Image (cartoon, rainbow, N blue to C red; front, top):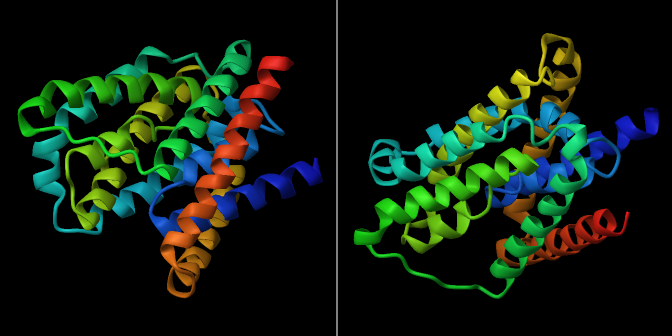
Length: 246
């Protein structure tokens, strides 16, 4: 039990460090490692509150919130509603399938980012395309606890500037965290009894965020991002193959 707790704490610090350095990566890294030692539903329950607070902070730290809400609301509505459709998808009965999906999502996200896949979506298509991307993101979030795909590629495809993109990701991740918390509470996976464990998780993530700020100042961001994506790719492939062959 102590080794498991230490492993989870290390995963949360690492995930927080990545988040602090590049602005994303908290749920993918944390969930990717934590499901190695615990069921996905338990990992998501530990992570959802720290993810909400860190993403809400990222969402509020910028001047573009109102404009982003007008621009990406179809994505947000689709993500929220479709996450709620899979209220019990993270439970132990579905854990193996969820872990396979998580591995595929992590690997797909890492691979598409490493090859710098460039897609542009015009303003005329952003309404329905945003709703579609949001719906798919919601289904992936419900099954895996990770809301990066295909939301992040969509945000990049609509031409947001760097600061807008970071704030938009915080906004979308916050909405997804709220919906995921509702799912977890509906299956009794999220309760007040988890308070001490969640507080410890939040402390570990906060430490990681602080370390990530140091890394951002001292390491070339492009180099760090490449290392992060390679780790994510290997982890995703390992999770998917391990669960498929189990």
